[in-house]
Length: 114
Length: 112
Image 1: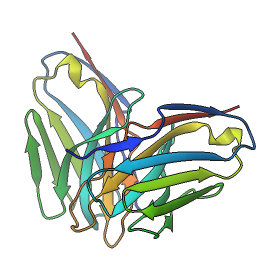
Image 2: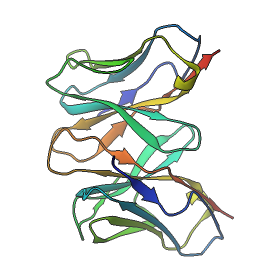
Image 3: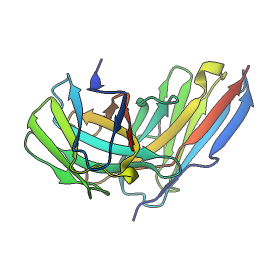
């Protein structure tokens, strides 16, 4: 079974802090994704990476950056956290070798910015 | 621009009933459609993925159908159980694009 692990289930930070959210997958997947999920807005794509050192902006990249130095790890960075970045953050991975491969998700990180 | 809609937003049914969840999309040029389940405070679990060339997929008590021409997919759950209570989301992948476009989900409650 695919395992996508997010480093923290719950995280509380203060405004202005630099925040790192880590995601690791164990299936050698090429594609990795970061989403945020907010009530009434559904899932919105922040960034995705289709391979090591590759990254593409999603729908809402402002205020975020990402790092993909190794295939198994995709990090989301909040450069200077703000209260409007309080949300549930979900990481997903997918095998890039076929069109019809599903995305597999981690359990999420619930981030609160005070 | 593709839009994905799930109606109703919430549904409550007695245990044992068969039920159908709906997902509609505006642009039929999709690569695939995927159904997910999300338990409260948790991540998403992939349930079924239907390729654009397929009409349906089955897994246990779940059956997902796809009608591209009408822009609709349904998720049929047979003999519902309280453990089926969760939010169900559908997402479509468009041609030549890695991204998924998501519906807002249907929150399902199965009453014992």
